[in-house]
Image (cartoon, rainbow, N blue to C red; front, top):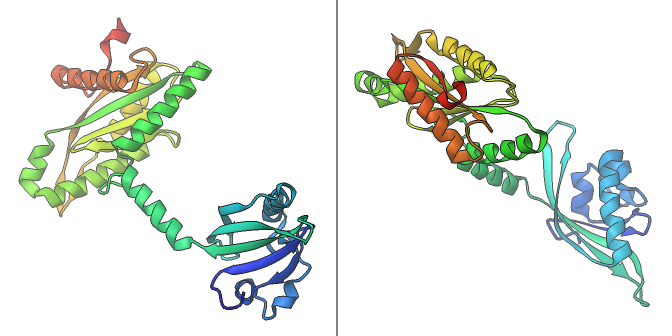
Length: 287
């Protein structure tokens, strides 16, 4: 037990520690493993975490079935989350009766961190750090299910920058990237906390407005986004202004699936460009 890098422990049927490895004792701030004998997880980690681990322990001892690779997290005194992978095995006497359990716990903080970073990179635009097409489609699917169940309406805003190619041609792509980052930050300031701002790619953005009762609410928020983007930007030491076009579609009036809903907002955006307006709601709703 003392020569293994994992924390190892035995518990009795009352979930009290009978023996622990030196590694576990040291990790918990004890110099002598014997100091932990008789203690429960509630004694060591608090009632909330202790009750959760006790439920797992009791399941193992009552069913005689092991738990393999259970991922758990516990907040440390410094505020950091400590992630562990735990295996719990029933311990039996000579008659085959379960008299306790053997636990083996390994810290997996680096593995969890790498997994979270990979998931973040897969679901966010690396430049603006906004949700990407993959994540926004997933959120749209969830919102459609929620809105359908509770008879609610939400809005999709398709946002396109007018003449962004001129920015890249004039100042260079590095400066254009800086401008896109600033645009994303300002869009976030123009929406509510429950809304989602995503970058689809290039100079196209998508905004999902949660719980919109009427298209006028969506137009009001779109106006706030316009106000945020109407102020001059400072890019690479130069002051520049941009204009944008926004198309709005509503669920379920303009579509009951993702592609139809986004296509409706896209068509409304192009209508805004043709009409010389900044914001247009999908015309089929206005009739």
